[in-house]
Image (cartoon, rainbow over all chains, first blue to last red; front, side, top):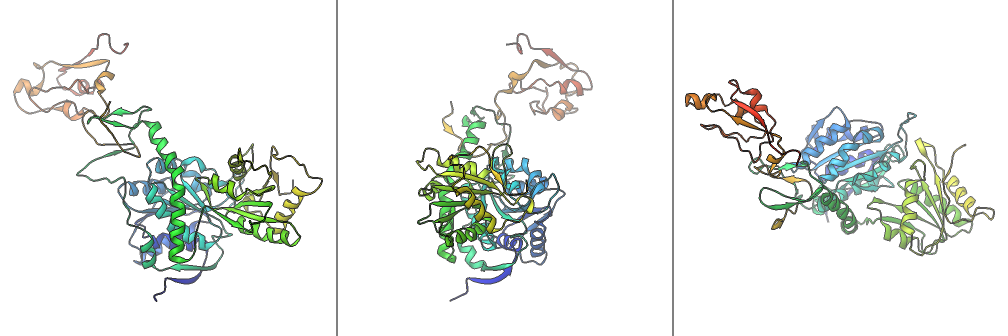
Length: 403
Length: 99
């Protein structure tokens, strides 16, 4: 039997670049930024060496990078970009354009803190700040998941016509080498169907895209009723709502071919858990180490790792947390003035579900602050101690830092 | 209302006359041509056509005489500005604009 994969020792950035290459991207436009830079280097080398039949467009900014990808996608090309932190912030406007035009782009976001103050290390504030742009957001826990998720992202994006952001932690994953099973091109080709763009610019059949669209529907010159702005926006929300099934299907089919199945979230030792730790990205693996420590001390802990943050898997989260009496959410981001973004989403999902667990939120690991499993375990124990506040919901999160 | 739905998932249209609706009703003044001053009419030769060239709405014909489609003319007045013989005058639309 032919080999379907080879094991390579690679870092997260190489995994993302290989994922894009194996997905046969045709246009890459990216601007280097720490810690994403090696993704752009790897892809430009693939193109220069003739290993990847793609156009690598060197641009002067991230805004331009996504503008190039958007334009390439409108004419029917498969496009890819990658960025981090301030680069993603600079793309903000174009993120809306890409999603609003329903272009199936894939973007690798190497999660990095946002200034001020200046910092190049990891947290998830950058991608969380873009959660309302209409992109699907997938968070990887390790390098294998980065590679697999980039490939799946194309299958998802091209089916539901929504751009997908594959997010992974800067340095912790981007610059850390680990063994990764790299599928062969032949196998990936079997997994990715031929892309059928919904927008196709053709000089013989000229079109306008993203023209001024008034609030109300109106008749065009051919007496066809065209959507108003709200209808177009409703369709994006509806597509995101419905994308859940496509994401699950892509993860399942990927599993059939490569033996690694993916869903919307990861569950660890959840069967009898009444104390549940929730986290996203590589933090979800650190949480498993913390949970195992607590298990040894007699606590019935489990971990829910969020893989897909948009569309938010409400029903799956509720089902996973059904048996929880204490939920401890660790966030590497914060919606200033409120709490960590994932904690807000968990609370929102649980409203009216009958799950009346006490929820505690801890802000951790901002700007690359080390998050040790012991600290996570201590935070869980602190939340459970007899003297702890017993209210179900607290107004604000606690921070694991020196203030 | 239309007989068919567009079926688009993003803002999309095909360029064509009337794609943005009957835009002539945006106008508060209309271009009126004095053909006695208009070069192509006066000389009976296909010449000049500066108004046709500059019209941003492409509603002026390259014909003798020059014709302006008032269904879609928004009344910007560029034709009046560029006409070398001042053959075009912008005349206020009576009772429109305030309606």
